[in-house]
Image 1 (cartoon, rainbow, N blue to C red):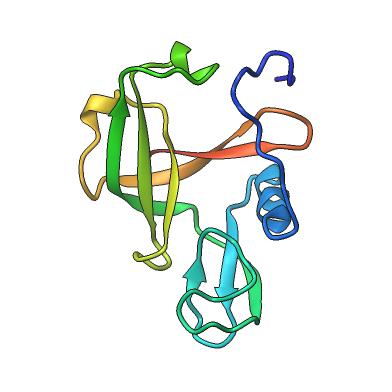
Image 2: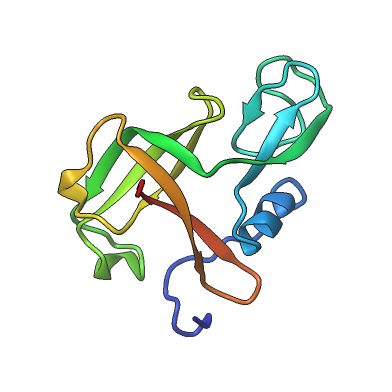
Length: 140
């Protein structure tokens, strides 16, 4: 898919998020893990939210999780999203650490069939040569 065909906003990687987007391009879900307290963290940033350490590493995750919370969007004024209503936006509790949650779109299912603690897995949508978006679907 090319940028001219993709109407939704496209992420712009920065210094903190570049390793995440590099992983997504390889269809790998990577997030930061603190060297000191070993907590996973999302969104990426320079300091651990739990212990304030500056020391972290980027780790590959299993790509598994459960739906912690969700909302079904029935009306959108954001270009590109208006064509997909209704659609679901969710917080995913990651399998590696349930209090580390990632916001995302749920795909490949009727949004009205989503339920609390529903098992999900990551899938990637290649939207440009540089950017692949992680989305989540019901676990197979």
